[in-house]
Image (cartoon, rainbow over all chains, first blue to last red; front, side, top):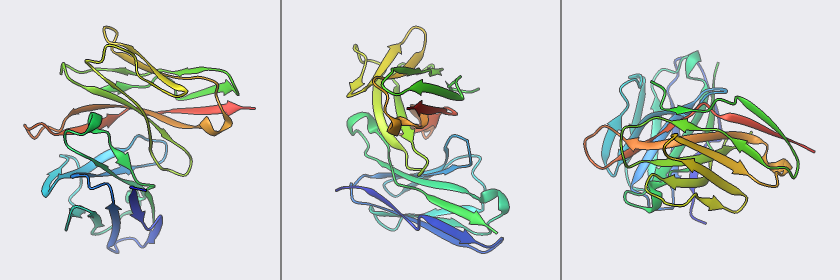
Length: 114
Length: 119
C-alpha cells in the first residue's frame, strides 16, 4: 500500500546532541511537510517543500533544518535539541492540484530530549 | 487571529449514539477547503472528510458527515453510530495559501476536541 513512513517511531536524544528524523513516501507526492506537535496542542507547521522549493515558516527556529534529497525522502535535522523540542514530529505529503490537496500523514516520531 | 476555532476541548458520547463536533473558521479567501482529521493516542493523523468552499452539498464519508454552513462559517463534523474505536482527538483544519504568492497551500489546525465514547 502507498504510504508515508517515518523512522524511527521513538527517538531519544541528549540535550544539545544533533538528531535527524526521516520521512519517506511511496505516494509520489510532490509536496512534503514537517509539523511539530506538542502534548495536547495542534500540529504546527515548521516548513514544507514544493518539489525542491523549500518554504520555511517565519517562526520556525533556526535550530530546525530540513533536507529533501529526492521526491521520496525528507529529513528533519535538529542541530542542538533543547528540552522544549520534545514533541511529536509529523511528516505529511500532498500533491499539487490533486483531489482537495489533502495532506496524508505518517505515524509520527516522538522525540524525547534528556 | 485564530482562524480555526474548536470550542469543545472534550466531548463524551454513548456508544451507538451520534455526536457533533463543532468547528468555526475565519477567512477572506473565497476559495478554501476544510478538513477533519482523527488522531488516536498512537499519534497518526487520519484524514476523515473534506468540504470545499464551492461544494453545493455537505460532504459525507460513511459514518462521517460534515454540516457545512457557509454563511455562519461553520463546518461541524457529525459522527453517527459512535463506536469505541472513535475515541480520539479530532482536528478541524483549513487549507489556505502558504503566502508564497503562488497556488500553494498549507493547513491551519484548530486546537482539537478529545472525543470519548462510553460503552
